Image (cartoon, rainbow, N blue to C red; front, side):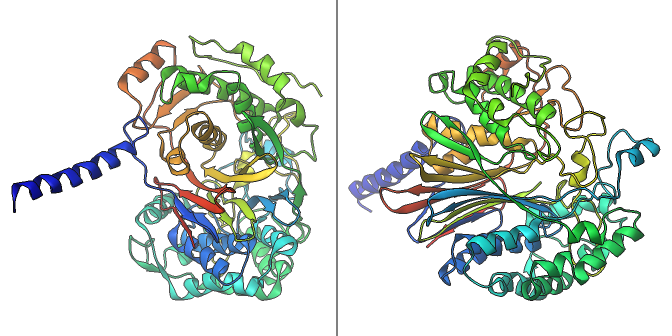
Length: 562
């Protein structure tokens, strides 16, 4: 090859290498491109579920239809995070009315179970597994509420792909196989778990075809019989009978009386963008409280990844989470000062408690003045859905009703047993919830639908995504791929208090110098702190008439459009 051609070829490859390097946002991580499409977009935590949602859009279904279909599929292919034994929350942008709608499809505690029962048993905390933490599963009712208000295709069409996969099987991913195997030591002792998830004596391995014929039958009954097939039919009777056998309290009457609630999303404005969350019993307003505090600082000037930014973020989070521990609970049982907690005036008071040089070791809540899945969809007409759904603690309580193909949630563990606490256990009460969908509008128009799954991680990551996009100018994929800050050890709605300021876990990408600076400010750093969350997002580009999609690089997520 002539030397000139060799030099020219080398120059081409060098330019390609430089372009790839330029995609790095300033730290030691890189990001792939966003997905861009004009007619519709689906982003979920599992590729097969994304494809199911996308197929629904291509069949003429809208974003709500696609969200229901994808959620049903996730319950099959990702049982380690969700399923029809869990709860659901959603925020919907309706293109027709140009409004946001919020749905709280979380269930309540058994009406026959009392606080006195736990005291008689000598318990100071509700168990994490078994029959006692089980609350009414709200997801199926949530599907039908969404479908009744906004859906277009029949439910039989929306559930058909999952039913087919449940019968014929699907290959299990490496990550889900790992999570399922981890559940065995805890959950395999409960009746029904092995029958459903260990048909050959073990949970499925990576690449193994897994079927769930019991779930297929259950979904067929729901598809043809509607929500009452689940809450008032044979499924409800089977659940109640199983729970009674296991020494539980969830009854047929608890299921039959369940209702979801349409609620008004609440918001704060962050540097010109309206960030929307659902009010308690969820923790979404914690993200709004964090943003209200951060807005009072020059975050952009601090720079992404700086010790100054990380310190400011963590101290703001501590303030918000103390209020979360005290006030966030079922609004039907409490007067929760939501408007005050998310007000700019309150944030201005709270920020005075922050020290720019020292980490707070203990903070009190303010004074009252007045593993999970996340998915998002968008369609050609401009409808967008932000939906989150969970069993809590991965696969849930371990209570696997005979012949139904799913596990009941253990969300009731989140109740406090401390008398007088906002979140204290009571019959027929919704527990504090960690799962939260989010939405952002700009000038009263849809801009962003997003969520980050992962327990108490979620409000922290919601705020970080917003800051990454608005203050640091990252694109949608970069905002999710950027290394994350996770503070743990705050006071909890179960009554546990923060000790010694908690601790910070930083993903790789933050420098050793920054870590040393944080230690000098009095922070405790650890490399073991649990999940950094799972991110999905869709951004609407009104100027070009397209959607941008992004998905989590830490999990199995996929964004796809057409």
